[in-house]
Length: 94
Image 1: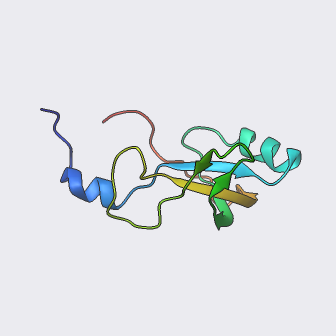
Image 2 (image 1 turned 180 degrees about the horizontal axis):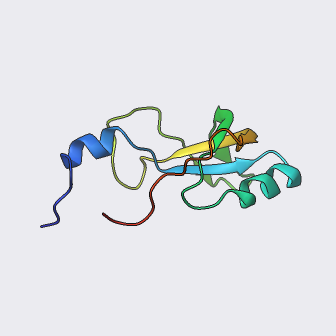
């Protein structure tokens, strides 16, 4: 069994598996410039995605779900990587 630094349930309810959807090509480029460990401020909306052929993807609207349907679809309207956020998050496993 894998060991975590804090209770697994706390990790599950205090983190998010977000799938960004860019508003346009410029936003897609801005998202692509964000690097692992870099702090970024994203603004946008949680959305559902539907296609004419009937395919759909529903965003999670609760903090206590886990598994395949527990991710958020995030329509990104702005990306900011301010210079005053020069400190980065640690990467990798402790």
